[in-house]
Length: 363
Image 1 (spheres, one colour):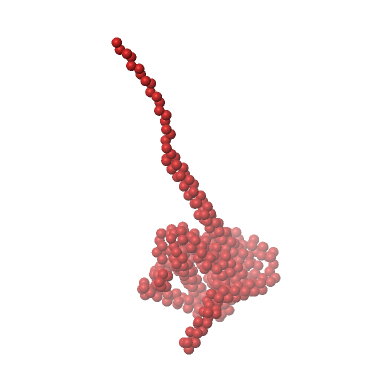
Image 2 (cartoon, one colour):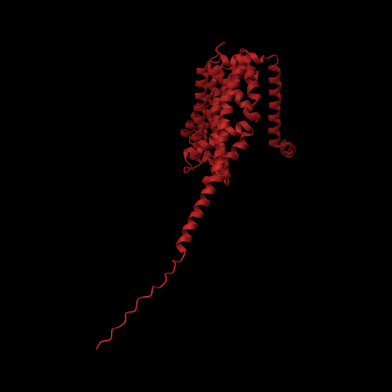
């Protein structure tokens, strides 16, 4: 039996591999989401969507925008926490904030966040002496913050409102509650493992080794993830139509599940996947009204931050590639001119003949 499993494992790695399996799963999710979205959008009236956009109170849009700002401010602590965990305390908060914001905004809108976000982080942190292994550790710890926050919110939300996820995963509420309790039990087991000692918190070997945060710091890590997701879900809750009514926790469960599906698909901006999941999970709302809500949320959470992140990275690259070399050349030219002026010999002065005084003869 063991030999058969070993043979199957080798065959899997040789002919399929985890990378190909992940690509296939992403394509399957995207194809299913697009099919569902096309089927759901049949018969949708564009004029009704435009009317629904005007029905969203401007005050709610402003508050939702504020929640998005707060969510991205919380997001900046993903990298800052990871940098302090791996001991890179010389990197200031402003650099960690720029890296978190730009890597997430650009990576999530382009797609394949793991690779695009990692490349942006390496471009920024390499100026501060960090290598590829350091950046990989930061990506790992930031991802851990994201998943811990998701599991805690989903665990709590699905325990109290298991039916909120049933429309999406088609499982009975009792099964969803059991999954939620399993998530919370897994988080508790993780904390228990962290308490057992520092040596047990080490992951990896040789040059790639990361020490996980202590149980006390992991509480901070979980709080960062929960607050980030809470602000995002609150922004969606403010934009959702008032009728029929839905409680915040149920919407948060649906929102996080839709976000995770979009994240797993690696689709640019979770386009199609996130929207289809929200439309399927919230059938009680009118399609036009819900599409108007998703459109405003996409502008606030995806489009505007993406434009700001691109501008920040473009300005940074222009400064590093054009302005700094120009300033260095200008400084160097100025030093050369001063050196030339100092080294030039002083002009020779012509000798002025002194008048010759004739001696008067005496006598």
